[in-house]
Image (cartoon, rainbow, N blue to C red):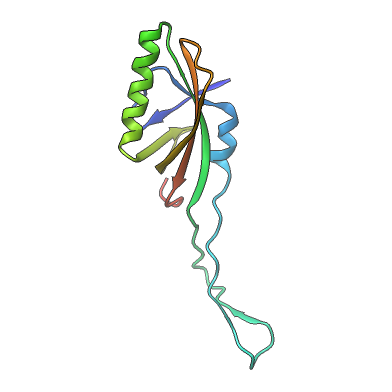
Length: 131
């Protein structure tokens, strides 16, 4: 099942998110390491355990599909997606949330069949607290 997606606030025609990518988006981000100190004069380590816990950035992959009824429409939709990726900033809107990311790479482009293609994008959500 395909999922509607917006990129940088634009509902790009012919672009959809593969359902398998929802797990990538919904996975909680990792936490940053807590401040710790180890001393030979004490047992164990000291750990700052106040309420100031912070989330770290995370890298993930998204499977995006591109389609068009004709080859020309497919190439136009593909071009619109590439134009958004060229900005380097990719805000992915899905399920009522916006994941603010930077574009790292396209690991794969496959299944080009004169109207259907699949991208595997590598993105970094640089501040998961800002959704």
